[in-house]
Image (tube, rainbow, N blue to C red; front, side, top):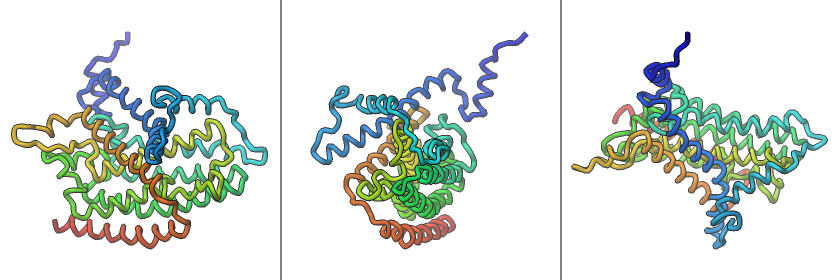
Length: 359
């Protein structure tokens, strides 16, 4: 006769998933806000960008569907769901269909190792940072498959541009993240947050505790804009030259998957930079005398709040830059990568190593 598992059995099982003493029900309830946060970041990121661009251009943005246009994104999703899924006659149907799926999956697999709090992490891999860097490269396969499979010269040009751009900027981005790995002495994303936690709040974050950290921080942020095809590096989607780039021939939900992948990548790189250089879920507030601000603003729920807010800040900066900076030319793009960011990334690597040895 079988028996239902006891609370101790569930606790033992949960302990293997880095959930500590939290009962299963509490973990499920606590995960519900994360689901809504993820939905906001991926779908309402479009709404946020439209509003930010409107305010910067002295417009109102979407206002018709729902109060202040809050339901506009849902209306757009419903519209895309009802659109006809067109596959061009001359297209390679397998590559055409698999391209957006690979790109969509590649942009979300890195979320597995992003710690959304001391108790909320999918997998605390001891090579989590290496996994996050490597899995991003999967997007390149999806982009190339989409551009080639479309059998359209504009789509192919956009795909080649995008692949060359992402592969190039992965080098300075990876070296910059390795600087963070040297500071923490680990590749575990969770341990990055633990190493930057302390009673003095943000003074424990590498960006403020290490005088060298500013250089890899800036290098990674600039490189992340190029890796996610954000302005001023949105050359693969140059409307005046390539119509819409590698997704010119796509309609309906396949078209929407490219946008979801882009905003998912924006959130991912924002989360990585927040974890590696800004303490992740660590509270920025210190313990001052009898006011234990750090203690009161720490823990699973507060940790989730801090990392989400830090990530949203960088997403806002990415949107801000899109409507501020002009698009670079292809030669300027490659010059910045190979002759500016990559040499400075090696300099940052050496300086970080020297600092860690002699500090």
